[in-house]
Length: 363
Image (tube, rainbow, N blue to C red; front, side):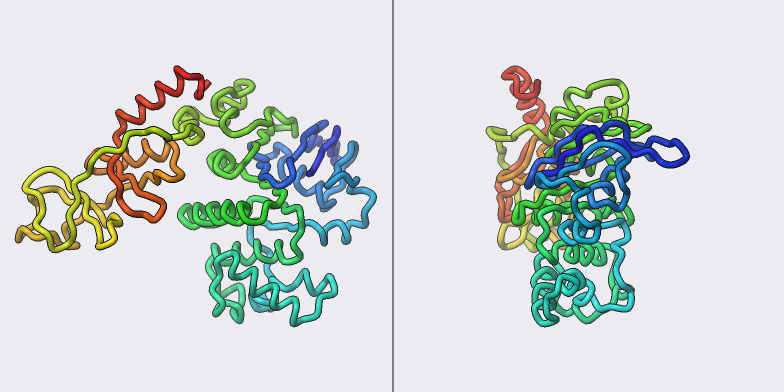
């Protein structure tokens, strides 16, 4: 657990970066700090490991005052991931990850074994161990940064806009990877971002800061979206917060309709849409009936299929997105193994939303 008690940071020129912050980041959860530039979110994060010293107030990490520890000793027990990964360019990937265990006195064999385990954990292939940072993509470098931060198995992980320098597709992949890792490791994570969508996706709780380092609201993402504390939070969260809020409503009971499917090589329908699936009933794309030249479905006939709705873990938002992004107007519903089980429609999602409102689930 990380606790801020009346914490203020004022710089020598009189600028107040963080103003009387009271906040508790729960143990084993992801707490996200979000807000516009100059709101104090990064300053708040960096005070936890004393990269920046607080001017007033108290910060406790697992019940201990950070000021009672030598800064170097404190940092060895806190993982830290920054925007550009901060890797040593002259060291191999394996030795980059092994850096902290070696500093803690592990022998080289133990440190490298631990580094190899963590490379696998964060999704880096073993053959990358001997490469250097310049030989990796931005997303791969960020994975190395996460692995290095986890190397000494710290209970606390600080992440300062770690995914902001990569493209949107890689960023989404890294976010998913972080959530997977957290489900396995259960670290106490404080994550800084300027992106409200990233905050809503990752945070168990989200702290919204306003300019001047004042905490505007600290709540679970669903509460933040449905009940913003004031106009500033409302405007920062955005006008489409109602759509984002669907991500926190269960899709249990959402009707799954029938869906016409064909395989490559089969005769396609003479009209209407059909979903093309492989031999294990995983979706390949859509077929617009009557477009295949020789009557048999070929890979060249396929139309991209939009997003998929996972019936095992999906929300009303993912169901609605699947329906709206599908060229046929029918969202593709899959099971946990990626196999097609049927279709979902936007009308059924909206009916489910109306039911949730009536029962108070969306209040």
